[in-house]
Image 1: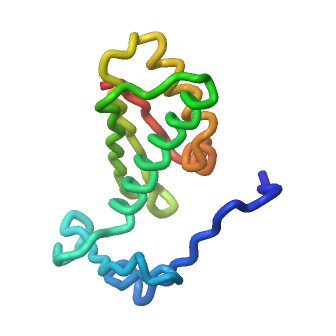
Image 2: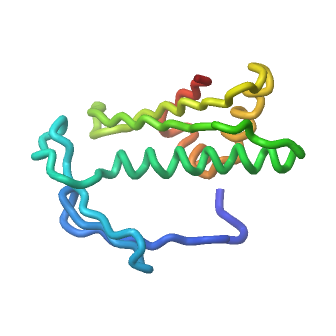
Length: 141
């Protein structure tokens, strides 16, 4: 689905593969990336694409929940947390990812929490980008 009006566009450049350096066009994101030991890297000091994806998805899903509650005239409970776990491994034709989002909504009734998470999963840009491509598990903690 094409976007009718792009509200924001990020630009990032990477050089030299998984053991690389990434920088955003505004210079705010400026990171060394390294390959984790589990997939053949030296486990040097640096982040990796899976950690960056997990960070982006967790933050985006939390913002999607804020959008839903604001639209519905309510608020997120204090202490709301989204933890993202991104796994990467081989498939017959290359590599793939799987994702688990563990969502904590302290004090919110189970039915309300389920509904909020389902609605956030509908509006979240990361959820829309990955739907049908990457297995996603939504877990209420």
